[in-house]
Image (cartoon, rainbow, N blue to C red):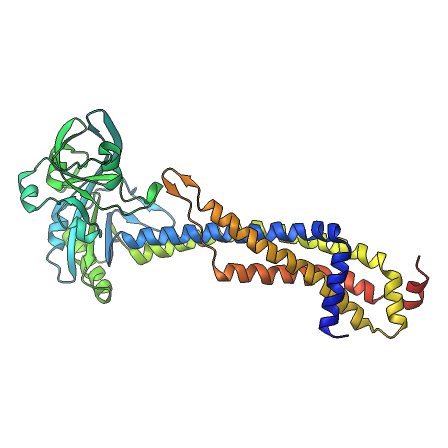
Length: 413
């Protein structure tokens, strides 16, 4: 018997018991839909995180105070005070760097008339927009003259401008930051993101102004300390050279012995991407496993129904064997039927999974849509897995059918 004949008989058997066949493949439908949807959520999350990390700057180095390891944080990321404004000024002289922006930050309340919002204050230098890949949508960014004069000027992030001013142009208006009046000179272009990944919920002021009016950071060796130093390598090829030059300069400035560990940490975008990818991969595998469990449950349902089908068709199997059907023919017939059932469920599950992913992608949480991404490999994985489930759970019923004694099968009532 050829494969086309097996397929024809499989479809005849399925159509003869429509209700039972539909209930049988329901587990496969739910399982494949769950796999597609879960992988779409995991893939969308990974793509969103990757976009956010890539958008924070080009060839970016983030220099943090304290020694941070993968397994622990030594000295405490928030409590370490081993980087200073003078360190940043010294880094500007390195030939491998295209820009350096020291930063101090703190949580503040910003008020305009009857509107107010809690946000993150960044005190930094004019290089910040270049190093962190920001663009000014309205007005302008502050200059070196504002740094020298400790000017009370502020540049608003897109979310803060929207919260305080709506569609009104905020440039030239006066806002209060922790009850201190600042003149708005610009608004940053929106970069997107949500939650901890947003880069739009902030206000930016000259770093010298932050030292004067928001003295939250302690001094270190007589110099005001900074939260972080952002540096931009001239190009991707000089990134490793830049890391080495930064490390050597800071170790020299901090008087560290050759055997002493760094009292600072240099993080690159590649480091952040690698860490984020590892985390999101675990998340995606976890979500996919939930769907895989549903597929296995569906496969058990197929095996159960196929065993019932073998019992019901025992006499038919006996007749086929009596007229010359071989054991292999019976085995292939029932394996084909189980695989067709599984693949039909898989195809329907793919369509429903895509629709579910599309619907989830329309859900807005906190002003940001849930990111989903159905990829070809996830669809292929679902098809292969559903076919494999049909084959695996169809082997036992098919083998049982093929092992029947023809004489006993013909006598079966």
